[in-house]
Length: 258
Ligand code: NAD
Image (cartoon, rainbow, N blue to C red; front, side):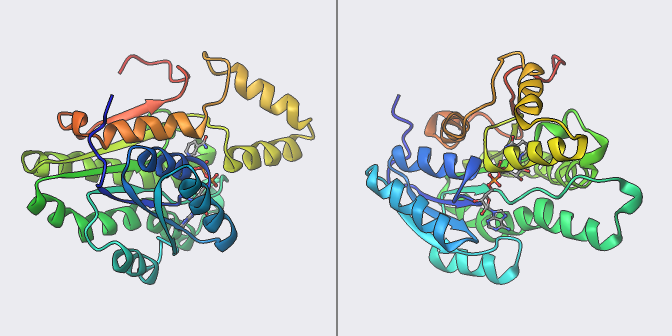
């Protein structure tokens, strides 16, 4: 299927590794021109080089998307994106009794306000051009929260609520806004979470990973390229009737129907 996004300009945040990278690669493979934003020069340059080597068009933007300067840099590099993929690292796990106001502000900044700010800076241009696709990478924790990830649950739920209203406001202008909710995807972040769990419980890493896989009906972790493919479809011409949705990609792990 031709997704109809060749030549579209895509801004992809947190895209040197993991899920963001999967999205950048899939969009570039469909002919979109991609601006890849991340904070670490080595992994960023490597991601851009690999996308180009596969025939895609990509530009590196060294930026922390949770900072005002980082977002300004991204907008300077790509002033009029047709596609925006919001993504940033998630907050650490813990016990809410230990979290200070500063911890909360940091989480809300990273996983709610930075996405809203990038949307604010780009959505009116999309509406004027009558085409826009905004995809926020959130988490299956929005539907199925765990206490230890309270900082993430709280911040991402705030973004989810905001997006629900916004999507309806711009639906008539050719702009869609959706959230993709990853379950367990085999990325550096998931591995580092498993390493921490193994260290915390004194268990073997492979045992922790085996038991995590066992909780997924599909029997395996997701891969960033399949996450990217779902993102590319949501950004396609064919997804113009899908908006305001929270789409789970979790191998069947969430047990509910809705
Ligand atoms: P990852 O750590 O493997 O990759 C994150 C990427 O984002 C890296 O390229 C990193 O450099 C970049 N990044 C992080 N913070 C940034 C910032 N402030 N500015 C610019 N770039 C930044 O993580 P991942 O597994 O791909 O996860 C992506 C998001 O999805 C995270 O918010 C994570 O919490 C969430 N998530 C992931 C999973 C999973 O299974 N992997 C599950 C649920 C939620």
